[in-house]
Length: 495
Ligand code: AMP
Ligand code: MG
Image 1 (spheres, rainbow, N blue to C red):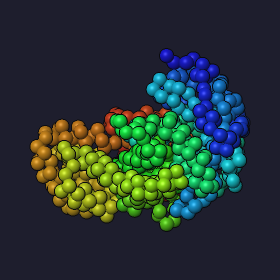
Image 2 (image 1 turned 180 degrees about the horizontal axis):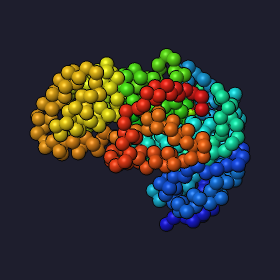
Image 3 (image 1 turned 30 degrees about the vertical axis):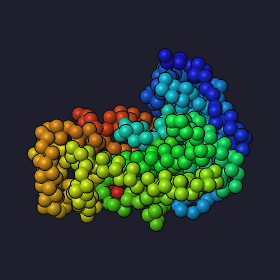
Image 4 (image 1 turned 45 degrees about the vertical axis):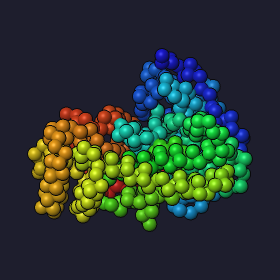
């Protein structure tokens, strides 16, 4: 049954039951003259909130930072991390306030304001988030969910006229994010770097008890070794992170800032900043203008995730003396990632099942796409047309048309080995190759409208991106190649 008001939700905050050193309790600094730009009824349903509540003044007061969540315990959490491969020391929620946690019909969700003012972890920052980056985070998390990629969610987007200084003056906004937990790899690194194994153990036990209780289950009849739950935790985080990387690669998503403080302990996509869904494909595509070395390019994401898992494993070493046991778990990453990547790419190619001999077929397509900067989303989507006999739309995406045509012949020959009817194959491909992704220029148009108070583009994108595999009549421009001006969009760490 849906709750009718926020107070009926009965928030708690289990993170606040951890020792004081894990966070600072503090109130948000509310936005002046806040306006609800958009609220997400689907996310509201996850916490049992009636959609009618989204339009109430109480909802706006809580999610603009003016009032606490009834029953909640507002706090900012501390963590540390490696940024761009370098140890950065203490970071923490510099502009995020955890309001509390709500038990929904299918699990508990933490609610967090992003951009609600300074905290003890703000360092040089102002604690604010600009409207531009808030719209991007709000839309991206829902787009990823629509694609079936594990992610934090977004409940509300609140705008204001409060000025925020970045490269130019912009305005402040607050996104309310939802996640079962916002604990990061960097939350673990925090305590290991400070050589506080007792705190590290407290955190690891909290995460295991709440999110990975199966790690405590001893195998039948055998007493469990004290280190086993922590090795089990690393194994499960490694597995989920490997699957997440396969998902990102398969939809052409670049995170942009894969620092250890942006890596979720639950294997969710976390902290949307200068991310990008690729238009023209480049193996080494770098979406973040601030990443001059290309550390977080598309083709490096899977190996960077493993590097980050090594930092998590290194932290857990403080609890688990068994280095070989930890290393053996990290060694499982490559196999899990590769199997998942091949499964996803095989399905995108319309294969009944991936075979090792299919590797050159996939590699050659990626090389061809890279050489021609073929549009990532449309290349995959139009493969289904080619299977049904309409080859031109696919071939049109390549300057080297004969090479594309020759590659297509190889794919069709491979399909012939499976022997499935073309219509069935095309249907299956259209269920895994999205038509709509949150291209930079689409986000940009929604941001421009939002700046003048018009949330209609946000609303349209939310509807399309929620069902990204289903073609909608009248929305062709959202599934088209980007306009020329899209090349000029630069996204950076400035947010
Ligand atoms: P990011 O890489 O964007 O996830 O942020 C890295 C760190 O900087 C985190 O500790 C953030 O909380 C903090 N941070 C980023 N922007 C701001 C800001 N405007 N004010 C305060 N802290 C910030
Ligand atoms: Mg972050």
